[in-house]
Image (cartoon, rainbow, N blue to C red; front, side, top):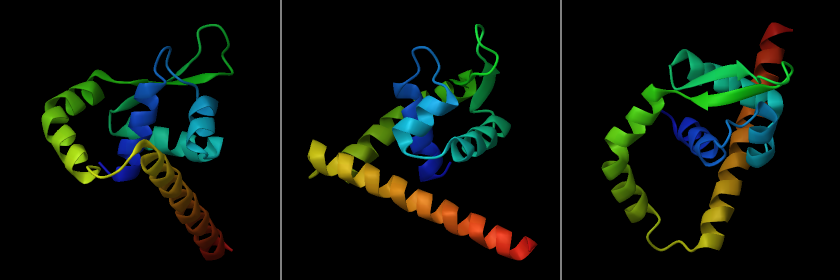
Length: 123
């Protein structure tokens, strides 16, 4: 699992009551709906999330964590907590938030560059 996928799942787990919509995840992460849908589809193929239409409004797609995803993180929780605690030992809340925002901006730039390269190779 990549860091980007890990962060994506972390956001979903924080917003999970009820399962967040693609738009909600896009807003929180600062990504486009298209990028969120792409990441969710990839994680769905890996069995970590499911995409389901909202029961009340079929236009809305919600992202649900799967039992496989929950088990994966439960099995790794001790290791991940120790790793994250050590990694961010000297970080305060403000610095952690800034780092997250910076990583998300970098991810946006990588996506933009990949899309531009794909378009260039096609055209």
